[in-house]
Image (cartoon, rainbow, N blue to C red):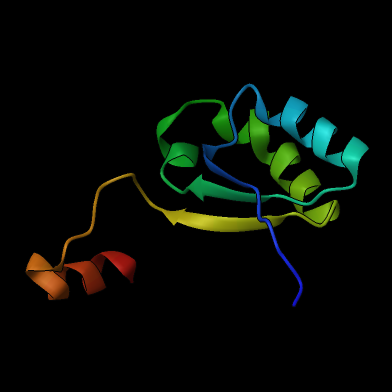
Length: 87
């Protein structure tokens, strides 16, 4: 059977993401980038600074995934609350 190794990058993009992407490109290796949705709303200038980088991720064949709107933990203590947050 085929062995598979997946590189994932969490909570970005940040200042080192472009260098990481450059190295992945040189090696011909795709990555998966998990992005927190609220950072585009909560950090002034973030969208202008990193939108092009997220578009590059998609253009180069990386997986761009939603980490969620924040970095809060989900627990099974209140399943209904988890469902509301996901929606």
